[in-house]
Image (cartoon, rainbow, N blue to C red; front, side, top):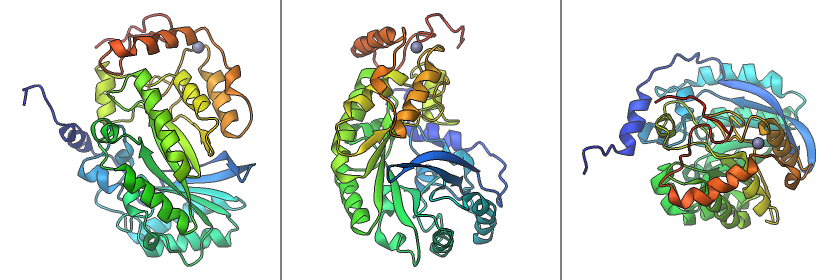
Length: 350
Ligand SMILES: [Zn+2]
């Protein structure tokens, strides 16, 4: 092994050693957002429970995921989870759609105890909530983990990330295999749940062009097995492998034009494919130039809610993105020159 080689897991373990104070009786966050529910725009209630977090982030972790920054590896007691829920539930009153996230898997019973999950589901059903979105790693998508006594319609969001095992293994550091994904999607749907797939755009080590192709192919592969697909452009989260690469200018977040291209190429798929880029328009998230970031993000929001046409979006920077895509095969990774998107150098120093 060359001296300069540092295994991926060492990066992640180093990042995880950074402590952070957390209030255990408070959720990480809660807010409302517009969302499509059975073709109708509604205001959804969203909350992130603070939990022990994702078991995989404790073991190794994915290259782009900084969710462990919001977790408590020692665990959160049932009592504290119930205190968090007391603070969340008023913001869900009158809502028809709720999204209850953890920074891991809601249906991992070692992260969210089954009794607590059952109470929360029953509470939401009694509040008149029609549908609840939760997230999970594929390995927990087993009916015994979501066999609630009384619950709204369940929508399980699963991070597929990519249908390519090479990308999953080497770029994302996720031990998922395509046949397993197909199997758990069927299991979820056979047991009354809907499935939403997350697909990454531009995990580390992929250039802009390859990243677009990987996301499009993954969406084509996933479409027959899921109910909707969210394209998640990789963003720079704290204490991650991606952040290390980004600081060294070895990877840059994807262009919003790349998001638009993926969505345009997926528009004839039999399921909704949309994107709501985290950190969009910032240097850490998917972005174009200063002049069009806001306009493109508004266009993506309209598209997500079933309005507007992405083909109408234009800006002078699109030609620079085209050049970048053509240059992709000449670059060994996902980097690009400083300030390229804004047409001048940003003055960033390393
Ligand atoms: Zn622009």
